[in-house]
Every structure is written in C-alpha cells, then in structure tokens.
Image 1 (tube, rainbow, N blue to C red):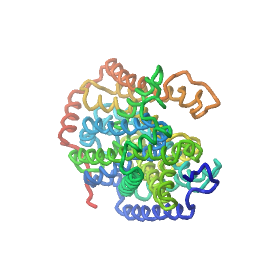
Image 2 (image 1 turned 30 degrees about the vertical axis):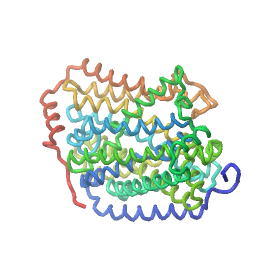
Image 3 (image 1 turned 135 degrees about the vertical axis):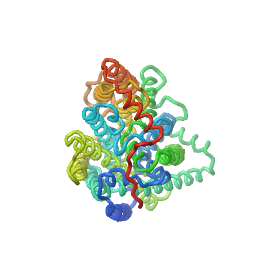
Image 4 (image 1 turned 45 degrees about the vertical axis):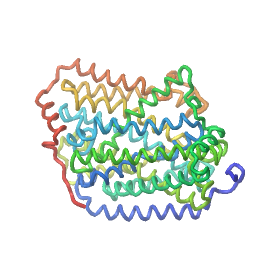
Amino acid sequence: MTTLAQTSQTVGSPGLNIAIFLGFVAVTLALVVRASRTNKSAADMYVAGSAFTGRQNGVAISGDYLSAASFLGIAGAIALTGYDGFLYSIGFLVAWLVALLLVAELLRNTGRFTMADVLAFRMRERPVRTAAATSTLVVSFFYLLAQMAGAGGLVALLLDIQGEAGQAVIIALVGVLMIAYVLIGGMKGTTYVQMIKAALLIAGAGLMTVWVLGKYGLNLSALLGDGAAAGAALEPGVKYGLTGVTKIDFISLALALVLGTAGLPHILMRFYTVPTAREARRSVVWAIGLIGLFYLFTLVLGYGAAALVGAETIKAAPGAANSAAPLLAYELGGTLLLGVISAVAFATILAVVAGLTITASASFAHDIYAQVLKRGKPSEGAEVRVARITALVIGALAIAGGIAANGQNVAFLVALAFAVAASANLPTILYSLFWKRFNTRGSLWSIYGGLVITLTLIVFSPAVSGAPTAMFPDSDWSWFPLANPGLVSIPASFLLGIIGTLTSKEYDAAKYAEMEVRSLTGAGASHTVVQH
C-alpha cells in the first residue's frame, strides 16, 4: 500500500485537481448568473420567490445540510475512533425527526423570510428581532468557521501546501467565491448550487462505498474487522470513554446534535423557499431519505479509510482527520478519483457557505435594518442593497475566522454551532409556537441567556484550552469539564424562557390565537410565488 506518509509527493495531480475545481466553479457560476436575472425583490433574494417544489427543496436541504463536517469530518472521526465517530452521523440524522414533527410546517405558515418573523409575530417586534438576528449571526459564524477550516485542509492536501500562509490564501479564495455566489445569484442561485452539490456528493460517496465493499467481496463484516484492527473501534469508548465525565460529554454532544438542527437558521430559512406548508413537509421527507442514505455511506468510508489508508497516514496529512475521505479516494482510484471526490468536497463547502452567508445577510438586512432601524418601511431596493453589503462583511469575517480555525476537526466545530442553535434558538421557537403564555421577556431571556451561557461554557471548556486536542493546547484557562455545553446550556435556556415569561405580565391572547390559526392552516400567510 502506497501511503502519503511514505512519499514526499503531492497527492494526485495538482493540475488535474485545479482543472476539476475550475470546471465546477465555471458551471455553477454560469447557473448563478442565469438565476440572477430574476432577482428583483427581497423575496427573490432571500427565498427565491417561494417557487421551488418540495422535492427540489429537499434535495437542496440535503445539499445545505451535508456540509464539510458530514463528508470530511465524520469520515475522519470514524476512521480514527470508529463507533464514537459514527455517533455524529446518528445524531445529525435523528435530528431531522424534530424538524419534521415540530417545526417545518408551522414555521413555513407563520414566517416569511427569517426565523425572527416567527419569533416576533406576537411579541414586541424590535427587541425580539434584534435578539433573533444576533443569534442567527453567531450560529452562522460558527458554522462558517467549520466550512472554511475544511476548505483549507482539503486544498492543502490536494496541492501539497504545507505552510499556514498558503492555506490562508486558499481559505480567502473560498470566501471570495462564496461572496460571489450570494451577491450574484441570491437564494435561487444558491439553491441550484446546493442541488447540484447534493447529487454529486451522494453519487460520489455511493461510488466510493461500492468500491470499498467490492475490495472485500461485499462483506461488510470483513471491512469492519479490518477497520477495527487498524484502530477504528467497533465498541464505544475510544473518543468518548466509558467513565466519569466522558459519558456526560457524550450525552451533551448527542443533545446538541439532535436538538440543534431544528434551530439552525440556514435550514429553517429553506422552508420559506416552497409555496405551501405541505411542500415544506415534503421537503423534509426527501431530505431525511437522502441524508440517511449518505450517513450509511460514511460508515463504510470511515472504516474503509482506517483499513486501506491507516490512522497514522491520516493524522500525518495536511488537514489530519479531515483528509480521510480524499486519501481513501486516492487509495481506491488514484489521481482521477481523488480529483473528482475532492472537487465534490470543494463543492460541498462552497454550497454550504453560500447558504450560510445568504441566511446571515438576510437576517441582518430584513430583521435589523428593515424592521428595527427602518421600522418596516425601508426605501425601495435599500433592503436588498444592505443584504449585499452584509454578505461582503460576513465573507470577510468568515475568511479571518477560517484562517484562525484551520486544522480543527470540522465535525467538532459544527457540533458547537449546533449547541448554540439548540440553546439560543430552539427553546424560543417551540415556546412561540406552542406556549400561549409566552411573551417578549421570555423570548429575550431564552435567546440571550442561551447564547451567553453556551458561548461562555465553550470558551472555558477543554475544547478551547487545557487539552492536547484543544484549539489552544499550550494554554489552560478551562474550568468547565465538558467539550460540548449542550447538557447545561439547553435546559438552562428552556428554564430562562419560563422564568422570563412568568415574571412579566405581558400576554396577548388574541395574537396567540391568530398565530395558532396561521401556523396550523396557513391562513393569512403572505408569500410571493414566482414561476421559474
């Protein structure tokens, strides 16, 4: 077996890799430019005129959700730890049941563009919109960090870029492309990119899965045995041990993954790109099928990487765990398959960061600028113009943050984003939809309280300092024992929502009744539908 660790050569052909990258970028940019011709209003920019079908949106949701964490981070986590790494796949998939049963249809009926439309419906609008937009921006930034870090590791591997400066340049280029997609194509262009990327990713992962199993005569048991012998354990405990704090840390991670999806702003915003609540539910059903299929593939890819590439080779490569899937592609099909699979991974990153950027920019422009600063009466075209400027700013921050986070495991970074979403967003969404007594103070305490508690616990956790795998391994200011704060921050946010609500006399029964009727029937919901 020829491995990277045994050679000083670049993996594959840099020329071929660049050519495939550029081909994908050229095709998708052409689609984005074509889509941009119908982008005239805020509804076009933010939700593509609510004109996509449930099937189209389900494919796009899977493209938006299956991020670098799914393809690069989870495959690497499984390759290096086995069973414990696969728990990410389980958590990410099961999370969709919460979105399907509790959120998708009701949110689609109640809001128009952003999560804040729902949260502010029966509250004092300006403070609640400000809080929701703040939370959206924080979650989007954490998620962007993960994608940018994945991009740096991936392209560094393909082009044999060892220095941090070279990887920083790559991350900056990804950021520039991301901004271009959003500025030119808006949500419609971004959706087309996500649909193409989902098809490529699932097809590519499926091809590699069949190839790996083919090497073992389609004997999954033999593959798992070889993977276990190479260090990808078949029993729990390698990453999340079976004693003391590590058990609690695993429960905390599981809570964040399962509850976080229903609070992710860039996923929630996709429910507004379809014309009816029925299509929103259909979107989720399609997404569950495609995402579930892909996560079954990650099991084979992770154990295949452990068995065929080896843990030491993966750890030694640029990007470390994030390099497992590309290295497996190189082992299976050489230069050509590596180039194709890496282009798919690159497409994955571009599609997800574009979706995150448009969500964050829409939240600022629609919620903060149009509704809070201009009190719902922005001048003609001003809201879309502010959204475009915000996309530029967010892109610059994402580039800087991605450079700082380069080398971190992207699945871990995404888990932190899920913890923030589950703590700051989900309690407020559920209370707004289902609790008649809920009010403005409860909303603010739940959002800001969840946000502050989560960020504080993350900063003072072993994930950031005080551990060999921390972001700052040479420093130690940690006092919170868990790497993921979900076990503490999620219940705390739910509790703060209750306390805030019960200590305020504000209550509008008529407004809740209106929201209940609208959320269940869609009556009164205004959505512009534009035919493609």
